[in-house]
Image (tube, rainbow, N blue to C red):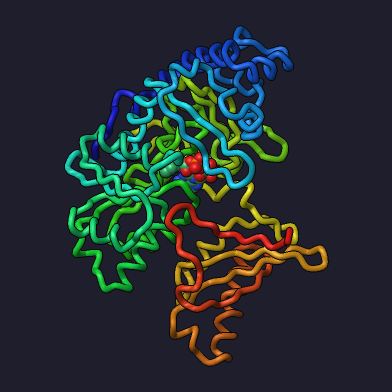
Length: 433
Ligand code: DLL
């Protein structure tokens, strides 16, 4: 199994922490002296770069949130003059202004290296033909993976997203061996192949590099079986860098976080207290190499847990488990927390359900209710009413047991739920209508 940068990726943890400390000190210093927002937040707590002696001291520093980026829109959080910024991206915010992120030449170099790192961990080499089906543009996905794949020496097809039939034709003709996109788009591609009678075994695909949205282990199994590939997960967010923050190795027991560039913490999103390794909570990230946009204790809103135990692959960097999703996407139904990925896991295990679903949240008499709309195969959809009713009851029972709260199930016709080319929208909230 190849490792892109063995001296760093397998560095012993004592040396890694030492490296983190040195880089963190420089980052805090740069943030304090070049970003007014950080200076005033630190001053408010009476903290300065001098108060920083060890890694644990980071916990005394304030969090940064998307709101800070919005208040300083567009460039107010940059720590370098615009002349040094050579690339601008922005995050796919659904409400209000997007957040703007910038990179210096050195930041772009680190970004490419970090993407090469997780792509290598996923088994990509200079022999591969990497098919990038993320949309090119302000979104960090396509450009991030593009430069990392080129750095490895792979042949890159900058396909961009959409036009699924053409994607499949190019994959067939150009012999794409690695597919880069969201897991939901990979499913759309698999569906389309099935519908048009194309056998994935006739393609050269061997690995999928999927990310940019939450997806379950069941979805991973589905994609592996349907496309005949190894499906790997990679995680990142624009505010921190884009893709390249963490990625699966072939052991696939959690994504290794690039700890020489980012310090990861888990907090309780309610009390904001730090949580120990192994506990579920919100991931908080601090960048320790970024020049243009240093982020100190950025609240990602993503819910995961960290595993520090050594990995069989030899890498020493901590692993983050597949995220349950974003705390903003968490639904509270009759007081019980429900993540769309939990519903996905249960639906995908049920015989007869197709892997396409949507969650509809509504409010009646001040009580929130959840309806799970799921596509089922033709046989069930056109079955007798009585058999259909039994199917629904069984599925509702499974969901109630798995989620800890009763939800309604509505079966919908095959192909009636929208297919996605980028990030999937799983929840339709009708409460505010
Ligand atoms: O989605 C960066 C990215 C691009 C990562 C391509 C991986 C591959 P944003 O658009 O800023 O950046 O969205 C970041 O997407 O906070 C998570 O909620 C979610 N996300 C990203 N990767 C994963 C993943 C990119 N592997 C937000 N699993 C993050 C679960 C993910 N959620």
